[in-house]
Length: 370
Image (cartoon, rainbow, N blue to C red; front, top):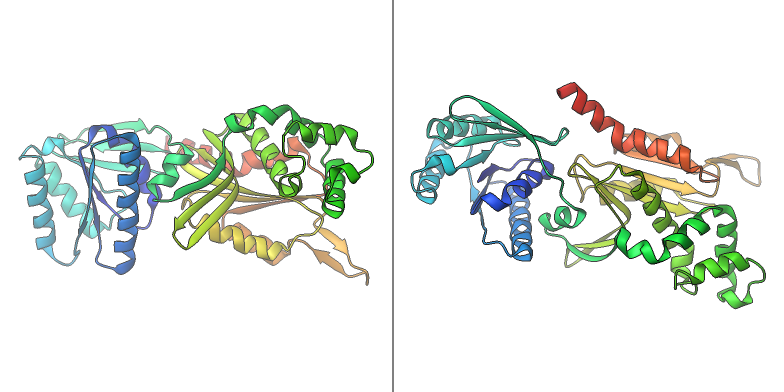
């Protein structure tokens, strides 16, 4: 397989994943710009890592291509001829994300020699194959799991919980999530007293928390449990191929990112930041969400879910204050981030917002292209 790299991981990774069992070599073509070289190196390292984990014998390589030098295309054609032993029907060319000045001449040459040219619709998750005889074949690609998506980006998964991991405490999570206002009152009391035995009342909450096995873990009680509850109700909808919570990944030796909830659907990776708080610096969290989303998926979406207070309140001087200002909302909208801020969690209304934000846009794109 030969792939032209561009600006989008989401044009390359699903195609590689779908074809990985029927290729022996994958060459990534990139421009001579430093950023393009770095981008291609991360992708090749990720592809190699997944191949090792799956026990595959797959050769992944990079090749620099000068769009202003026709001899670069000649060189690629000669290299392919050697690899396929002259049988270009064995060659797949993914030209989805490449510059037209490279993809068009390469496609023409390779088609003329019997290769297949691929075009991936990353919104519809469909792959169109253009065959040498001029016919086309269209197929829906299989969905990657969250692990495969992260590994192909050469990230190291440090921590995560799957729905299988949550099964032992599923009943407790549903019970505690049924009255979040009262649960928040208990969590705040525990933060103040530090000892569950020093808290009077809340016997039902204490008993349910003991069922999680982490009733003395302040970090879990104050935040992680809410994240796990949200992950559970998202998974129960069946809208996503997989849901994880408590995710920490190492991008490199000096950079780690954390995600409260990750969801994947049709090869798009989405995230939700979960906060059960009365006060929140909305501007800071919008900036934070924009930053961590850059490392996930160019077409993925995000949401900040904040439960515990209305978006608008008055301070002691009677001035109106907002958790998320109009400027925060505009920045979030441009960054593909939805803001859900409410005093209490209405699960039905929340799930409708989730559907409208994460599911409906892709279904609309699919209808428009069908």
